[in-house]
Amino acid sequence: MGALHRPSLVAAATVLLTCLPAGADGPFGQARVTAADLATVALTAVALALLIASPRAGLPARALVLAPVAGAACVAVLASPDLVASVPGCLRYVQVFVIVPVAVMVTLRDRADRLIVGGAVVAAAALQGVVGCVQALTGTGASYAGERVRAVGTFGAADVMGMASVVSFGVIILLGAGLAVRGQWRAAAFGGAALLCVPLALSLSRGAWLALLCAVLVMVFLHSRVLAARVILACAAAGLVLLAAGLGTGSDTLGRRVASIATAVTQPDQSLSDRYTLWRTAAGMWLDHPITGVGPRRFAELRDTYAPIELSSGSDTDDPVHGFQRRPLLSPHNMYLLTLSEQGLLGLAALGLCLGSLAWWAVRGGAVIAAGLLTWQLADFVYGDIGGPPTLVMSVVLGLVLSRVARAEPSVTGVPAGRGGAR
Image 1: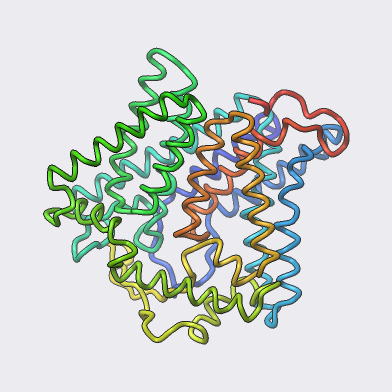
Image 2: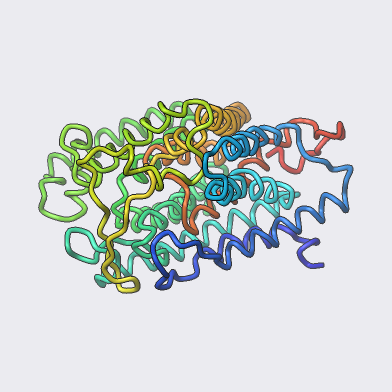
């Protein structure tokens, strides 16, 4: 009964349960049901109970923007040559982009609920950040250039960008909160966001850095164009100072990582070179199956058929929990190309319609935090895709965004959705 009185606690628990330490698992690619996965089942059950108990509340009309995502995934499964292999991929895709976000939206009924879930995301970011800093300082993180100095939080080397994702969400929420308040609360929010930038830097995730920069610029611009201009000038000045000081000359790990951003296209390192090759592989699959793709979760199966010979056999990972492992490259590390290759133009159009509509509504409605979260995710999908516990945090964040932007419209039952999710 407690879950029905404050159902957002289940969504918050889902976020926090993703922080449980990653243990040594079986063969790479083996499906594993986590505590967070079970929490999403409970979250869905609570959401259904709420809808049954209050049928007049209905769902906001804007929530229907998620329907094409589920529809396109189902069409791709029906068109897949390997139905058995594609069904699990379809279910996971629908869970991440439809079921969990809608369930979160249903459970967020007022400002207190949104504070609970947003606070859980910030708490998870803080926990991951502390663990990540300890890893970087003590040499117990994931391996980078032969040293275990890369901060990965509790997710381990198997999900090397997971900590960066969760920490980025925390930075955005705190930054948005700081822009919305004044006085000591603003200082506390900005201070917390600044502190979280430390483990984000230690994650050595170039994509996360760039995605956060894009998100911050969008948020500041929505808050104040004058402030946005000042931030851009400050960033440009800081960049010149860092270059003048010699950052990126190769004298330290972080400096080398920052410097590698400038040569990402002209002189890509091995990881970027493999990523570009995987992108071409995904494009080749799409060209042969343009409308419905090769089928969900079939990229890995068909990779060697389409990949050029220069693609590496795998990626080396190393951390104290899993040890050294050679992990095969089983996705293009680009959500748009993964969707295009496995679900074709129908799937990519549905995903683009969904995320694009949410972003447009967030910007038009002046929802600073929602716009920042979506901007980060849109940029993140250029270099990453779904997988691992952080994906469920992303699903909850999408539900948080949906609850903010969707209730500006009447519900599908024709009954006004109320003001609870308007701001």
